Length: 444
Ligand SMILES: [Zn+2]
Ligand SMILES: [Zn+2]
Image (cartoon, rainbow, N blue to C red):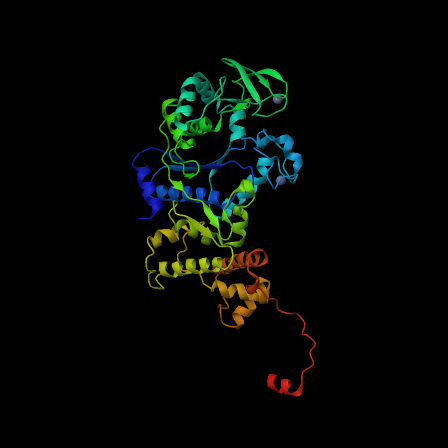
């Protein structure tokens, strides 16, 4: 059985509406590791719906999280924003509403291309709307129990006046520098490192944020989450998932969601991707060079807990070939692939939108990569391909769209990632050469 079906079967045992969550802090370019998280969840969601389960796919952007440091891709002037929620910081290019949106919007656009349509929640709105108010009060009322859970499980020591709430200083806007002095419902008195002393009323939204280890389980309860995968960094012993589970069950009286742990994706030649170090390939970039069905295939064909390497060089061409072969097998045009399991389900889950009823017209991708360098535009390419009998003169609209789309991906790949040995240019004008009589004779 396909891994996504196994996970869906686990969920469907419980007869209720399932909320499958996925999310991220958009503090930098959103890389392919996050794409793995959302495509894993999307696959389980699709299988669940397929089995007749009631389910919703959601995406939580934690844009109320604070900027942790001036990342290598940011100007030095961002120093003054460190500690502020990323929804309240200006965008680096000037064209988005906020710093968070700068990274989030392009990722959400990629999701559309890859056929994932989650309901999107933004933490900054949830906090400001008061969606978290009850959870904040419960956390503050249970400060000692939460402190106990975190200290015992994570082996961390928390400061004496610690509260499970990071106050947002009204003067400097940071959520990392205000220290609580006294909590007496509904007021917290605080003093900030900037010198400001004040008080916040927790019944008002947006006056602060739950620390991550409390925020996560609170969110499970608020949004009734029943499934959420996480990267192996969060799944370590004593990590946020461990404390979250306990806080969710004991403080919020809500069963912790089911999950799967996913492995990181390595970039060939570069190692693990980290957005914070600027070594990541953004999901947008990856999708620009890879046809969406092929990118989905890469993830559907591998168990989430399997290490994977993405090769943006020649390996990409092989990956497309592998997908095309799977397609031929799916439509019975070729023998099964030895050792490949669940190929029907893998093919179906690889489709961004719908499963084609008949096999799409295939043009070997490596050949397309050559023809695009000769023809350059789709119309020229089409002429060449028809003239050489490689495509029928009348291609269905769908097939033509499919080839056109692949041409765009191939072009992008050639421009940005292809190794030099693959690239060539056809000269538009004949070179001026003086040929000898012998040479002319040979060419005739
Ligand atoms: Zn921007
Ligand atoms: Zn302050």
